Image 1 (cartoon, rainbow, N blue to C red):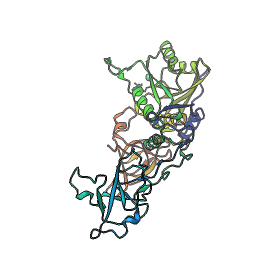
Image 2 (cartoon, rainbow, N blue to C red; image 1 turned 180 degrees about the vertical axis):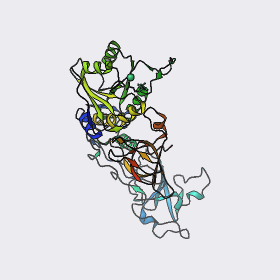
Image 3 (cartoon, rainbow, N blue to C red; image 1 turned 135 degrees about the vertical axis):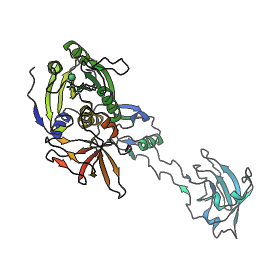
Image 4 (cartoon, protein in one colour; image 1 turned 135 degrees about the horizontal axis):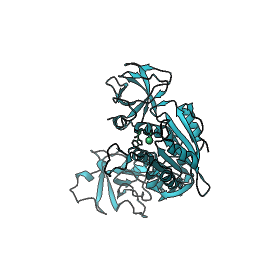
Amino acid sequence: MTLPISSMISVEEARDRILAFFSRLQPESVPLLDALGQVVAQDIVAPFDIPPLDNTGMDGYAVHASDTEGASEQSPRTLRVIGDLAAGYIMDTPVGRGEAVRIMTGAPMPPGADAVVPFEETDEPLREVGQAAQKGASVQVFKAARPAANIRFRAEDVRQGQVVVPAGRVVRPSEVGVLSSIGLAEVPVFRRPVVAILSTGDEVTEPGQPLLPGHIYDANAHAVAAMVRKFGGIPRLLGIARDTVGDLTAKLHLGLEADMIVTSAGVSRGDFDVVKDVLAREGRIDFWTVRMKPGKPLAFGAFQAPDGRRVPHLGLPGNPVSSMVSFELFGRPAIFTMLGRSDWERPVVKAITRDAVVNTDARRFYARCIVTTGEDGRLYADLTGPQGSGILTSMSAANALTVIPEDLPRANPGDEIDVMMLDWEHAP
Ligand code: AMP
Ligand code: MG
């Protein structure tokens, strides 16, 4: 097939065109912990009440509240201890008037008792260590208990039949907790996408190998793989393809089992045509010029897999910052969409720039910056330094990207600008 003509498009247009190609993947059942960040595929219903029985929320004495009426330190009420109950054990003997059961947090309430007096309101703390009230001994209550005091009631958290986690919910640690609490060991979630990643370029060398003069180590594949994993996908590194038809073709074929193939380099205008030729020959592909900086050249298309599937292909620019920013803007939404997630948009907030940001070529400028909270409580943005698209340390220094509009040639120190937060947790 022939190469389509490049066209200049906005970030949103590029993203919409890309996302039109993706939908969420099939559901699968996975162990709870592996499901973190995945989307629950069906409503999860509680098979029983939680708590399953009324139980005590405190260590104390299960009593008849009315037996403690008027109790004070000056005039304690004395009750006869008829048992000692730990969590996990059930007591069938009813608690009679004038009686108490020593009871530990979580233990089901013995029949008859309607309140729990915490140890602190009895003479329990006054006893010697190891001299807890034995069965048959007595306990002194120093404070009146209201009926229901310190009882956790059956089903107060979850009622049998209730949806505890709805379909569409992203699994966070709290969902793992709730799902465990109803006894689930596995949860149905939409499958994680496998993303095959291929670097191209005669100069590109695998880290760990000796570096020949004029060559560079492969930063892109590894940075993108890390992003894939962080965004919830499964990265598959295909290695580095030389700029030859044979090597490129062979390595691309290794990726055809994936849900998406990501290549880096070889898509800009100045590139040797071999990468573009092979990409175009092996599948359908568009080469775009996106109105953004860094990361103007971008390719998107699809390869035909032997099983008939069309495997989407994102061709990232070679410069490492461009590659990461492009994967952030286009790869992340694609991965989230395959996961069944629509919350891929990063928070964009206002910050006051302390640096001038110059943007003369009418593209949206995603400059790397550090956003911090000032002493006045407002957010401030400082550029990380030189903004060349090869300066990868600018990414690692940053926790945010500026979003300087295409039509804004300059933001001055003190101006309020939009910043896209990549990382709230780690302001360097
Ligand atoms: P290209 O898109 O092939 O024109 O490459 C643009 C720039 O990115 C060149 O300086 C390449 O050497 C560099 N580059 C290409 N691939 C990688 C890579 N995997 N890791 C780091 N830099 C790369
Ligand atoms: Mg190249």
